[in-house]
Amino acid sequence: GAGVSQSPSNKVTEKGKDVELRCDPISGHTALYWYRQSLGQGLEFLIYFQGNSAPDKSGLPSDRFSAERTGGSVSTLTIQRTQQEDSAVYLCASSEGFNQPQHFGDGTRLSIL
Amino acid sequence: SQQGEEDPQALSIQEGENATMNCSYKTSINNLQWYRQNSGRGLVHLILIRSNEREKHSGRLRVTLDTSKKSSSLLITASRAADTASYFCATDARGSNYKLTFGKGTLLTVNP
Image (cartoon, rainbow over all chains, first blue to last red; front, side, top):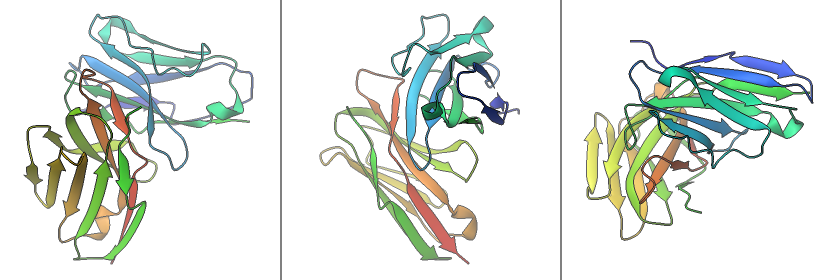
């Protein structure tokens, strides 16, 4: 079956612009996660959605970052007024519920010039 | 904050040899997971071991968990060139059933 799909796969933009990253989770997965991975580093948790519950936004690094999940499925991560330090790979994952293995997309590589 | 830390940072072996990677963490956990990441790709879940388990097998993978030492090991037997990847452990803190904390990973290179 289809896995987690992320788009775009690569995004290059100028400092100060806004960007939107999209994640299509595996159908039926109630949990969705966003992570950020900088070069040679592990994953940094950003935000978590579980069903209709309020999302856990505790990992978002600043108020320039926001995320939505519409209809319990597709999610978008928005970064406003991008800065060079936002350059990283943004990974999305979904799972059948909490405490279950997470299935990852291939990520969006974001480069801020 | 709790963090899984892998050791070594990099490991280079010959095809057919076994590879052992270690992970240490700081606080009590519900479970520990190992993931693999090929260059430029997302993470692939390998195995999940719960805090009340001590050992788990999956194909050529063997994972151990020692909660008294707050450590885990991943053993890959009879390695293949296709096993070349970064391997990450991720811990699920007790009281936080969804937030995984990842280490920086071990880069494994299997030479043909």
